[in-house]
Image (cartoon, rainbow, N blue to C red; front, side, top):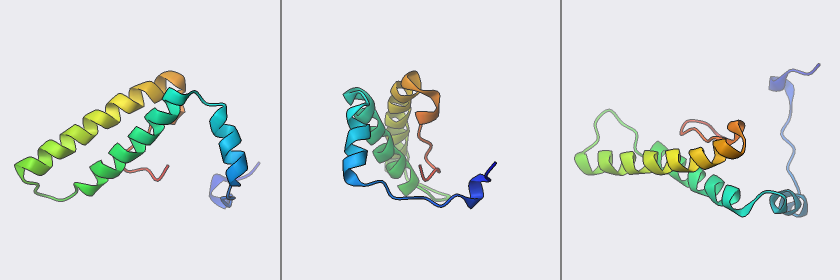
Length: 87
């Protein structure tokens, strides 16, 4: 049995990544891309006090993230993206 903190990430060659991606439906790949972009945008709006426009932009990004996560979770529950996660 291996401990997850001892595992070393191994890069995947581009051809293998393309092969894996070709097995995943296009709407799932699009939702994954949208979720990653929305999560990155949510992370950019950090701070104790945001002005009204930043709060609105953050809420919009959270809405987009939730919409993309709904599609991803319908395909597989572990595909959902969180704003604070690196995955």
